[in-house]
Structure formats: structure tokens, C-alpha cells
Length: 146
Image 1: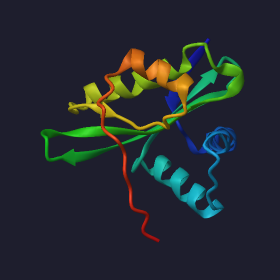
Image 2: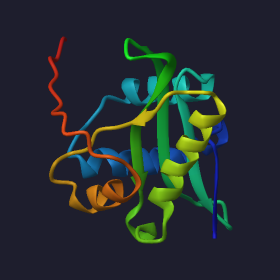
Image 3: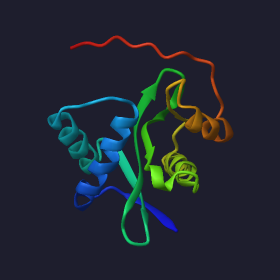
Image 4: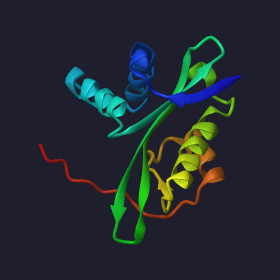
């Protein structure tokens, strides 16, 4: 059994393990300063965050999301930025539950939609996403500015 709860400062060490697992999955690395800033933004509520915890308080998955205005809607929209479930907890419905948590939050805050991106090669996650959301057909581009 698991429950989904907001991330708290006391969750930092357990959150960090999940965060690192997420970065490793995408073969990405961030400086400690970026990770610390991200966590501080979650705690401050600038970015929303929740973790899935088992009965012993172990963190099994995380989700982060934010809202923004849109030219396509009078209501804000919700961008689900990060979603990760640790290896040992996959296949138990946590990913779907974390998405549903964000969807419920978005509905309760009168947002227009929830959307997210994933890697084309992330076939396991895409199988879930194809069940719970509509694939829009848009292709993601970005320009890195450093």
C-alpha cells in the first residue's frame, strides 16, 4: 500500500535518492546547486511536489508540477515536469496514481489541462501515458541559453 503526500523538508534525503534515480534514468546530471534550488522551490510552493510513500515511510516515487498562463485558455494550465518511480516499485500503479494526483489537484484548482513530455525511447512510461492521456502529435524543440 502507498499514499501520495506533499514533499516536506524532512523528505529531502529520500527525495534526493529518487531525484538522482530520475536523473540517472535520463542520463542527466545537475549541479548540487541546481538540485538544492529545485528542492527549495518545491518546499516554497513555487513548484509543486509530491511523493508516494509506502507503509514504512519509504519514498517510492515523485512528481513535480507547475502552472502557467496560456494564450489558448483563460484558465492556467498545469505542466507535469517530473515523474519517477523507483525500480522496485514499478508495475504497482504508482505512476498512474501520481498522474491522477496531479490531475485531481489541477481540477480542484480550476486549471484547463495537465500536459507533459517524455523521451521517445521511454516505451514503458509511454505505454502508461497512452492509457491515461491523449497523445497530441506535437514535437518538442528547445534552445538552450547558457
